[in-house]
Length: 613
Image (cartoon, rainbow, N blue to C red; front, side):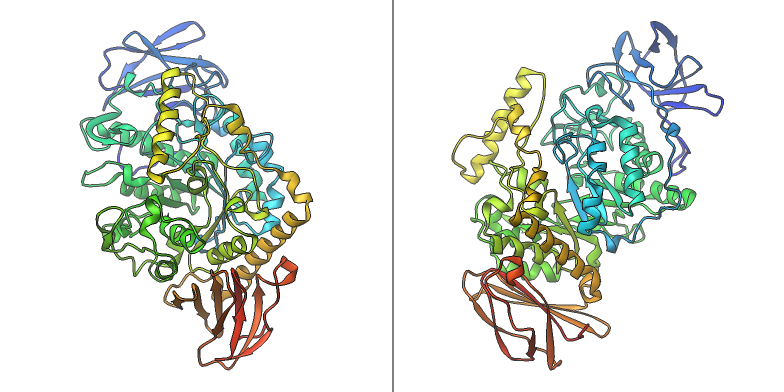
């Protein structure tokens, strides 16, 4: 268990040696006796160092069911790769190296070229499987997506869940297609030039099917999180816990060929040790990259507005390559008319959106009325490619009481404007599944627990959550099958004219970003932004070498008179969301002079360039 020395195979769970024999390893530091139960036989395991137990055997074959017996109690393998009978059943042996990969020539694309598409495997297609996703990959390629982001796939209770209640971090959800299904999906993505991002959860483990405490001290009462006792990353015996999650990171990159991991809510990882867990992960991933000569990215979700998470290890940062940034979304939503309730009460609309473009963090050491304290820090030296922005994602849609998408909340013109606000930014853009055609089905929170008490607690928890937003009406039942079914995308909408037009709009918007270097470079210093609160408009200047671009965004419900300032005398229109081909009201002039007043239509987006290409 030497620190920062990455092996070719996992150092926990069941792994096969070259001769076909298996080495079985379990971390159970407080156990007096550990045995492996397989094929109605019991095999004693030998205690080695640091609380690990080990067994070499030729009695295990791929697909075999097994359990550990720890001091007389039978439990599944915490590092199980497959749970064919669900979270309460025995584990099954999987040989991850049996899959025949065909992506030897694949090389991860630069992070700055990522255009993310977040999807939920269970609701992206009617099949709700990895193979169902494969059948739709050509759609994503034609859209212009470069990176497919999967919500968590770690085994969870039942067949309906967002994935954040996973209790087997190494096991791929059986109903989606299991380990081999995920490997097929990644292989198919790489064949089409798509990177794959996987959402993983290291801040907590789900409540149902959680057998971790039966094998070792995985939790500590030193800290508490919204999910209960914190995972033990810095208390007694924490080395084994840290190794467990580091091995999980390495497995996804090495054995599943995942290109990037999105680490959920890293602010809830409680670790006050000298080397933070994220720093350890970064160091060991760097070793793996050197060994396999491939590039992997680590992306954090954090709501702390603290650049130490994305600062390099050399600056005593945690070394994450990028982070989700919710504040851009919140300011954008308020510009679009979101009522200032709950956490939206902290955002003032156009002035805060201007600040988000310029500074990434809005609350960067200023007083937050919602939090009742000074909050955040500056990220002035962090490049734009370290921030991922969006107008929708699973949280911001699914954590609304009724799960409404933008298509149910905003006018067609405003939806187009919000998408454009994301794609003209110096940050990395992300779409949420179905957004590109104006999907109308909600994305609600859903579960399929089997514990009646837990089901009741989840229901009550959802009701309490929306009390802060003063939401009225009945909260949809997370446990109801219909709540899940309503979240499945309606691919048949693509056959309808309005939705076809929206898809073409998104294709054009993505193409615009890819074509013009002034729009796709992530240098925040090659940008200037200004806003007009009276007009509720924003003007964004971006440049790269000889190319200058100006983006005009009108969030008001009235036409507004704006001017293009700057030294360049002539400007040519290259994009207009109000153009009739996008079902807009009227086109703006194609050519304008500097300082010439022009009318920008309500809830619309204009782009002009001084480089006539």
